[in-house]
Image 1 (cartoon, rainbow over the protein chains, first blue to last red):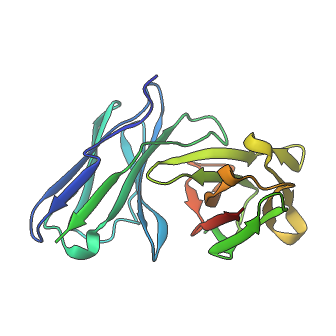
Image 2: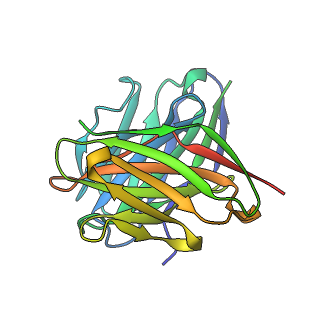
Length: 114
Length: 114
């Protein structure tokens, strides 16, 4: 299996622009998680899905952030409009429903908002 | 709500010395506990996990951790540090029931001095 695939790996954009990050989880995994990593706050859980349904989006910082999972093999995280404080590395991770199952992470999308 | 506290955002050890990375957790139900490692510009990888059973768990690359319920701790150790162990280490907790949301600590950067 190719693992969790994220795109783009790097994105540089200007404040106010829309940003869309994409994730393809490992086939057969039931859960998908979006995390944001910064130096100051570490790894923050933004939202997670179970069987394509959002379960908990309490970590989404503002209404500017939205996430969708239209099918089992694709998810997006959108920021509109983007701000410099959104600069971070965004990780997608997936896992099976197995109790205590391992999270498999993508390589991350590094976002820089100027 | 569950949470994880990692003591020491940076730890330095000499090559060949003991590695000890501290993690304390808070959970209202029996937890699942994890240690993940992150190498530069990569996603996180699972080192080891505790779900049930033996409280001393062994992971990859010679690491191990012991679940101590009375101390609410899950410290990570390795008897002899190697240069290749230099990375960032994350402790994580999830509930053993429900949707098993995974919450990470802020991370500890391990430096290994030759």
